[in-house]
Amino acid sequence: MSASASPSLTFRDRDLSVGIVAPVRPSGGAEIDHAQQVGLAAEADALGFAAWWVRDVPLNGAWYPETFGHLDPFVALGAVAARTRRIALGTAATVLPLRHPLHVAKAAASLQALSGDRLLLGLGAGDRPQEFGAFGESHERRGATFRERWAVLEAALRAPGALSMPGGDFELRPAPFAPPPLYAIGSGGQTVDWIARNASGWFTYHREPARQRERHATWRSAVGRHAPDAFRAFGVAIQIELTDDGGPATPVELGYRTGPQGLAEIIEEQRDLGVHHLIASLRPTAMSPRDALAGVAEAARRAGAMAPPAAGVAGAGSARAAP
Image (cartoon, rainbow, N blue to C red; front, top):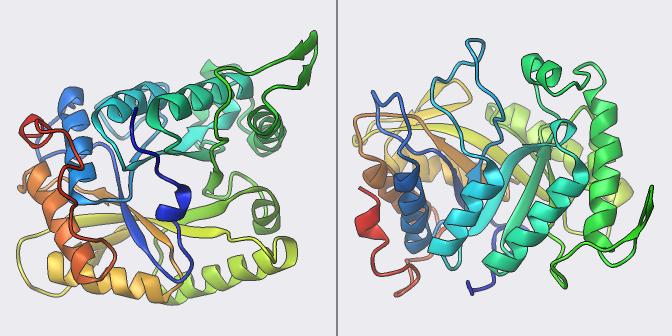
């Protein structure tokens, strides 16, 4: 059994942690070595990253900008759970309008049982019309579908032993399990007030500092209205093109091109903007995936956002399995 990792270790008030979104890949690679990604997740666990995030891309086609394919998020995180002990396991984001909420609840309960309650269940409404057609779902109605399925999913996770559904009363097993926190990734077609009422936190994309400060203020105001006594996380997904030089950070789409020192300053700035967690998406460069992870970890430690890696956090073979 893996060591339990409470969401409070990933999200803390007035503090910031750093996670990584898979895949982490070198430049020029058209395909993904999925076994290597599991090894890299173990490496991230050993380095001290707070979370390993995966995306939900059910189908690919000529309309999709990435040529490589993604594993099913729950299958991928199940493999990562078996190779790690501490790092939280996040979906960023499960496309709820394309999945039956009871299937999501079953997968979440299963992953909680296998991982020691490390799941961070990020949920989104989806933005690829082609997939909605393939699944027989309405792209135009995805916001309403998101709300409806969120309610069913939350009920299944919060009261697994007493599910009153069409056809009878049911139980969600394996039981007991700790209900994972639900996070809104993007707006999901909802208002910020709806998200503050219903989610454990809100994740948005990187924006320039003045805009980000404004969005955080909007979020804190909504939390104050709807959950004044609760902690609600504020997270940011950011693109990082990591270099090995010490020059100043330069903006790229949804993020920055920077070295470890510049990244440390960005992390400090994000903390000052009220961000609790950064989901770092590493753009492919000539740097190896392992070196890129080590560079981000170095920056996070400089910024006080990551402790030194604890001895024995990952299995003895983890680093060797992540070339």
